[in-house]
Length: 270
Image (cartoon, rainbow, N blue to C red; front, side, top):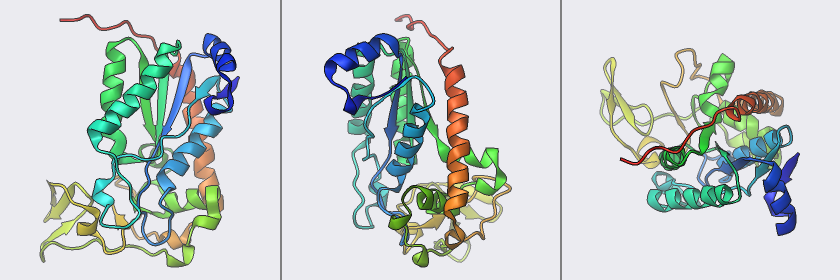
């Protein structure tokens, strides 16, 4: 039985919570994705995955939380951002509301890496209270399921393919190209937002997207040793995107079957 919380009356919600103990919360971002993808890419992918997963498992799914922490993208117009502490509190409050009604397992389906620290904090808090929780990020999994789906950058071929499958009319494929990351010096090149390359090694730091790219899209080196960084998002297809989505949906469903078997006792106070 699947229940979209937004579609229920409170009486229907009461009956649903008496039976269903898994809550799914999709989270994402409103942020620039280069010249070819819409600002809503991250939350739209998370929402699609969450809705399709919830059709296959007994769950109560909340409306998507579409805005996350993305301040480092705000050199490009349209990006919206919530401070990490506010975002953490928001996520926690939504999760606490589900727990109040009897939910014992909470799964966040997250579409934006900038939300990860907040989600980790919420999951730690829930664990201490005996609530089983986790968050899934598709780009950490897809490349492990198939090498050709390894994420190679912000607005890359896999992300573009998925958006073609979800909302093709909002993709400007004619504007897609392989991005070029800036060099800081003749010997120091940015590899992603948190590292730069000097010789054979990586140096940890933090960049804004505008430091890396003129167009907002950029290559993120290091996600997979087997990744082909020459792939252009202009080569993306809706068929490839739907294949990624379908495999990810089945993966998440399989995980949920095991996830629901996990139970914790509240942590003892020191």
